[in-house]
Image (cartoon, rainbow, N blue to C red; front, side, top):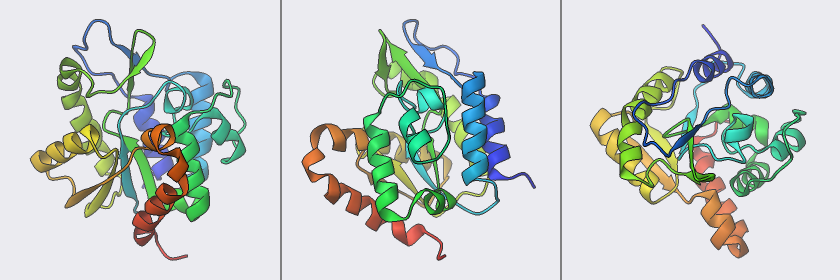
Length: 228
């Protein structure tokens, strides 16, 4: 049986963007670039070299400064090097969402235990840009419609790796949760999807309450961690 690491890296190396994207929408697709391949191989073989069951955290889509650079969700080049111990040649730009996620991980259990219990993906594992800026899959209706069959196919592939089918968590309590819940109702992937506030929203608008949100995440996720 292939490990999570083999399945994840193989999945991303063979991923194909959805067809019929709106003309002005570009795709963030770094997964075949040599530096990204090396970083992903190192990361996933460090944290996912097993077949243990994990609970899904489902983001929106990769952004230009985090997963769109490193290939690893919510992991910017700084956190990849300083927290995960994986040296890389990427420009050391911070991403707000990555800062929150790794502060939360450090406060709750540390990277090894966190990644042993949770797998982070996105409704769309590919990100999008328009006019040089991040574009969420739900920001424009034609893009959302173009992404749907791609999103469903990606989810159904990842479900076969050993995900907890009782509960998944949606990173984002607004449009992302609404769309993920709609897809789940149609396809019956999980018994429930629980929403969590998006790290970028927290860091941009609620930063003075950062510790409260870190505590909320940790309190919500801890029951889904295996005892060590």
